[in-house]
Amino acid sequence: MRVHLISDMEGISGIVNTEQTGAGKALYEEGRRLYTDEINAAIRGAKAGGATEIVVMDCHGAGDGFSWNSLIAEDLDPGCEYVVQDEWTGYTAFLESGCDAALFVGMHAMAGTSDGVLNHTVSGVDWQNLWFNGTRVGETGINAALCGTWGCPVLLVTGDRAVGREAKALLGDGLTTVEVKEGLGTKTARLLPPRRAHELVEEGAKRALVVGLEAILLRGALMSESYLELRLGELLDSVTERAGPGAGAVAAVSAASAAALVELAARATDLEQWPEAAGAAAQARRLRERLVPLAREDAEAYQAAVAQLNEHDDDFALGEALARAADIPLEIADHAENVSALAAEAAARANPDLRADAAAAAALALGAAWAAAKLVEVNLAMHSEDTRLARARQIAAGATRSAREALTTDE
Image 1 (spheres, helix red, strand yellow):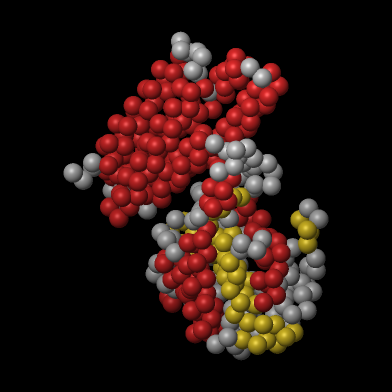
Image 2 (image 1 turned 45 degrees about the vertical axis):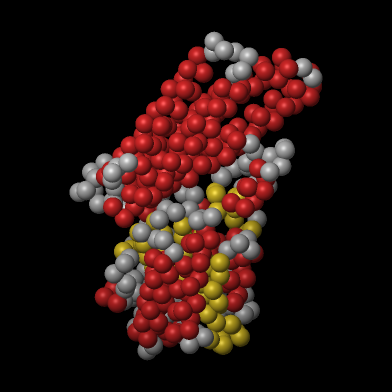
């Protein structure tokens, strides 16, 4: 799992005034140490939560050559890489290449927040208020929008009580927040000792990623626009309802989950070991991004077929509607077979620690391919000469071969 850790200085425990955050100020070196130690706590938590690649981006403008570079490099946890950028939010390559989650550490509240420690928005001198599409935001919102541009969910925000409240109002109550201090004014706070704050930040980062893995980001409505994001339990509850998504949607989600596992295995593999790993990861991601909306499309096609039956009340009308809908499960099956083939390759060539994940992906993709192929058969029950039936059987057979290869790699 690839994790972007985006950080600022004012929300760190132990930091309460600009003497600690401005380059050249008397307490700046103390602030840097507090900052680096808290970032390390988040890195430890992210690794415990399943992160395999962590890139830290310092977003604090300290001035005097230290802007976006306040972390003490030699003290950073070796389990991360870090970015020194030329301008604020100028670095986007990690997001553009595909990032699974963002963790915001050390954030502060937007300008004008009475209980926000060192509150400001971008620059306390040049900026006061900022709106995105009518919503007033601070730097948490700016960074969240940056991540959202490339589909990266924000799972954690740490800082004072005020920024936690601001972040949940913007990003939802499902967001994990960690409060390391309570603002009593702009430069006054009741704080946790750094050691205790580090424990909470570490645990919060771990919990955010573990819970975040349960979320299925649909990038669109599964059944309506209210389902922009479903957690696994919510999806399963909707499946149990007669009007909810059926086997085709579940097959698409299963195949997308398998693609995510293949992407994980490929990304965590050294290119010397598997030179095509980066390409495999990109292909898995493309398959996942196509499979996710197919879940919605299958559910909508099924609803249209039922509506056709209700309108005409005869089996022939339903059969014709289902035949028209057969293309969607056929595409799901086709993509699932491709995922299974990628999984078989990953099971043989990926990082040995993740080959079991690749094998599990092959098994998931196999089930999805067979389920979708079966739906094609059912949808075309009145059209025995339709060429899509043969194609569905061919796909299921191909997925079977790939899954067998993946599951017997070590035998």
